[in-house]
Image 1 (cartoon, protein in one colour):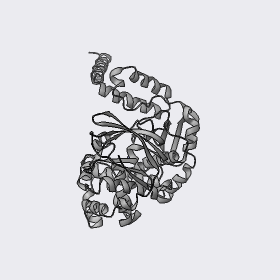
Image 2: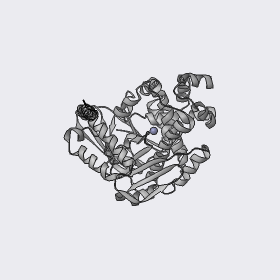
Image 3: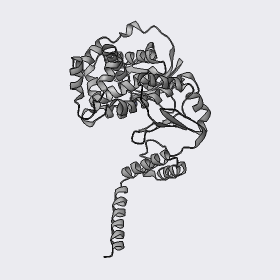
Image 4: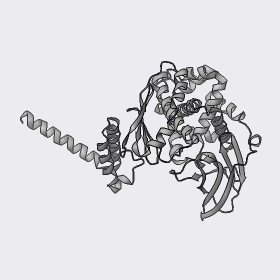
Length: 395
Ligand SMILES: [Zn+2]
């Protein structure tokens, strides 16, 4: 065979493999989403939109699509600094400009805590709602902000989210703390807790949000620490299937407590260069003289009791409607914006947490509704939390 023929045969064989590979819709979707992210990264927004259209027009792909990123229309306005670059969709440019106003202050907090840290994370503020994934390889974060309102609560939440993701990069690239498969849960617990910590410190909301995280931990975790250990070990399962469980709140509350024990520098020192070769639980024990489990139980013991905090009335349950033998629809009015899946905890009379479901397009509303999975005849104990304000309602 001549050289060109051989090359052609090889090309055809490769094409055959790729075609066979892409016959599986799951793989095809992953591959197409990857191409979309690559095109967004390179600023080829038309190509990204055509690829997204391909997904949306094929029912077997569309049904599996968890997030849509291809439809991005760049506005004239954008923002860039030493740490980050923010690109805005033209359909939400006014809202986005408000939401990022004053972000320099949050960046100053980061640069004062971590001198010498440089990064160029690229944030897309996208129209619409839904999950906001992060592509660490490309350094791109896709934040859906269409569901936010131009109010200070939502500005704080968004700027927190921006610094939260920046902290992950900082831990990885600047401090040398890596997430690895064999210690996934425990490393994620510290990684997310520290990202929450820095995110809220940088926007000046730390003590209010720590109070929130402490209360969630008191209500759900204090009575069942073993449950938390199980959640940490099965981290991804919890994030995807048990979204009402306050895992992020627990991680922040614990990191806040731990920071008080060993200091901010001690915490950063624990993370430093604890890459792939370090046994992280052993490192905790070596550096602090106690095991992770011991620290956890000390943290749980000192969590504030609920009775000390529940003296507020800011929320009213407007109606409770049974939709099915195991599902209730509850609507509320509140003085403060609430995101029920994070701000409302529901327990039955045995103290077991019940699942809350929400329409993800509506977050942080002063009046709204949520679904609760609950059998008939069960008494409900709702704990409603806004920052350091807590209210309990029996239904
Ligand atoms: Zn995170």
